[in-house]
Length: 311
Image (tube, rainbow, N blue to C red):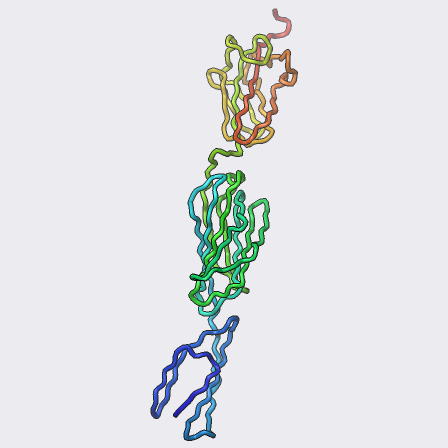
């Protein structure tokens, strides 16, 4: 009987008995193996003392190859919502991938929900240590580490939750993830989340009126008309013109301390009306605090101007 000894793990075996014996089999490289060295020896039962060694065959093992697909459970969200992200890491190579980890960069305004991390390989649950979280002004990097080994054709599925904070309306809504195993890196995969402002907004609205103040109290009375075509400048360069009733409004103003100034050159024949009760309004400029989502009124009182020396 003819026998053959090989120092490789056999996956399939085919043997033909006769004058010519042919054995074929496949192998799977071990973890981290990059070179396959194989030597075989053969003999026969009627020749127990005669064995023949083959030549050495050296092959290069195909490396693992990772592919990452990222999805979310919704296309749009607003502050207060929770989004479930799914990361699917596939080993599409021909060698095992060990110690698979993922780094996911969340955009500004998305916060990783603690203890929401879940993972599986097929029907087998995967345990993770607490992820590493590094926050910056641009967003948050979440690094998920595991000791998982992915055999060729296997996939690691990771799920976690992220909560939207009010800062999300100022972020891009796009996060970018990449997996790695040792020195091997996957493609970069992103998910775009459309952010709706909802009931929250980081902007406010300015409203007001330019009017003739006859009694110099700074408040418009029923018999005090508005002034049309008056020009008001904001500290960010916005130019506002009042309507026929002297009214104006400006939406989507970034919150914080904002200033507005009345351009008296746009009102020939008028000057700023003195206020008998609040001297801080005796200036063509107003400073107000605008909170997110709020509305603030800024009025300007004027009075007809008289040339010096005329009665």
